Image (cartoon, rainbow, N blue to C red; front, side, top):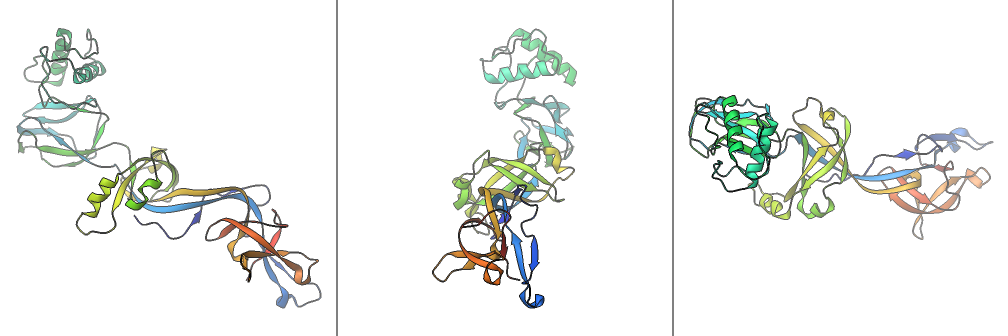
Length: 357
C-alpha cells in the first residue's frame, strides 16, 4: 500500500461567510480597457481545513482460518461456500456424526464427561446447551455433573447422533468466539479424511477493509482511529481501525517471494456494515485525517505571491489602492494542493484576493 502523493481536503466545514471557496469574480478599473485590466478574484472563507492521507484498501471478510476434523472417516455432509454458521449450527458430518459450532474462546482439546477435571471448556459447553434449549437442570460452571451428562444426551439425540451417551468426544464440537462464514471448501462430500485434516476455510461474517501499511509507518496508526471509506460503488461511509499488524508481520512480508517494501496488515471495520450492500469484495479508498485547522481563513494556493525577501503575500483587493489591490504579507498555516490557511493585516472572511488567470 503506497501513500498517495497528493493531499486532499476532506470534511470541509463552512460558516455563514460563504458557500464556495473558489468563487471567482471578474473586476475592471473604471476608465480603462476592461479586457486589458480585468482581474480574477477569490473571496476568502472561514472554514475547517483538513489534510488527509489517502490509501488503497480491499473489501473482504478478513483472514481465513482452517477448520479441522478431529475424526477420521468419510465426509457425509458439509456447509456450503458463503454460508454462515452460528453457534449451535452444524459445520460438517463425518460418517454421519455432526461436528457442531459452539461459542467459546477455549478450543476443544479433550473429551468431556463426568470424570473430567473442572475447566472453562465445560462452562462453554454448558452455556451452549442452555443456548440450544437443552440446559434444564444444569448449572453453568466449570463442573461436568450428571445433570450436564443428561443435558448432553438430550442434545445428542436432537442432533441425531447414532449412540447418545452424554459424553462429548473430540470432533463433536468446535469452540469459536463468533459465527463463521465458509470462504472455501477444501474437502468435498464423499472424501475420506484423516483426523486433523482441513475440511474448509472460514472467515468472520462481517466485511472489513484490509490495507497493507508500510512497516516504517506502522506507529502512525492505532486501533480506534477513525477513517473515511469510499466503497466500490462510490458510497462514502465511516470506518474504524480494528487492528494494526506488528513489525514481525512486516518482516514476514519482506521475506515473501517477490520482495518489495515490507508492509504490515491493517484491518478496518465499517461503522455501518450495511453500507457495503451486496459487495463481497472490491477496492476501497481509505482517507485518514492527519491534521486539522479549525476556523481558518482560507485562500486558494494560487493566490500566494512569493516575496523576494522571503515569505509570502497576497494581493488584497482594495478599490482605493493603485491598480485596485494592495500587497499584504501573510503567514501560512495548514495547506493542501488547492487551499491554504493564511493570517495577516486585513485577512478576514469575505475579503477578496487576486488569483492569477
